Image (cartoon, rainbow, N blue to C red; front, side, top):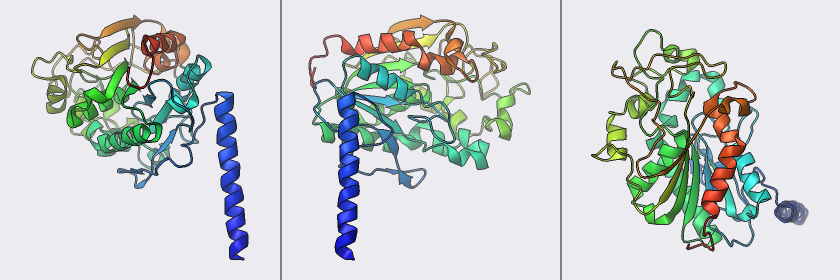
Amino acid sequence: MKNARCIRHAAALATLVAATTAAHAAGLVGNTLPPGFPAIEDTSLARPLIGFGAAGPVARTPVIFIHGNNDTPFPTACNPYGRVQALAQYFADNGYAPSELWGVGYQGDQCDLAGDQTRRSSIAHTNAANVPDLRRFIRAVMDFTGAKQVDIVGHSLGVTLAREWMRQDEAKHLVRRFVAIDGPNHGIINCSPDAANYWRAPAAGGFTPASEVCQELGSPDTPFLKLLNGRSGGAGNEGPVRVLVVRNGDASFVYFPVQDGVVAPVPAVDSFGQPTDFSKSASLRGAREIVLTGQGVYDPILRSSHLGILNSPQTWQAALEFLSERNKGKGD
């Protein structure tokens, strides 16, 4: 009986390896991590991190894709978005191997939100709480691939999460290039005490000034953002890392006090109750910057520019071109 179980286990493992090898050969980006990649526990959920990646040769700098708040690295039963996987597939369709493309899911499959929507603004969804997950994932990717550096593509909270990891670990030398897509580098508009800020309601996520996400991102003047952006407030402190910002210039429900698809606007007021212009929150001083408009057409559900910009052909092409410039090897 024991031998039979061992045979079944070996057969299942062989099937998994064969499927992974076939997907790699076909250039497909999957929704699993490869055999031999270490299981990393999500510090907030006490379960293994989800993500994608593949075994195989690595000729280019590996790319780490980091989704935003309340999102996932690929679609799940509880989240229909997960579009960083589609962006990674675009890279695979244009010369990258699946073994060079890695996505990390640092908030699980989001199914826990069904029981309590205020988790969207809770400690488990903050930058600081998720740095340990990102730290271990990037180190594991580097060990698995043998790479000396990685490239990073982050969207929304994934942008500040990557920046906070680099700041905490003084890890800028480990990052070659960084694509920052519509990130909250100077805060978000959704955290004010204003009565018209409907995001404060528990059913809308509970983004009150006292919530943990708002304590980080509710104003350009939060202690978290002051530390992240440096004394000058310029948010240009990425050192040797070459940075491309891709941001919305007309609408984005986390930054602009205007209608964004079906998402109604809220007043341009910060978590301290002060009138604040968040419209250029995604900018980073010293970075190359692309400003896009009309990105809501790429969000098939809410028609929002903030989510659409991640799914945009313009964003995908800009990211690919930026990371491909003089990209000759793992140490370039």
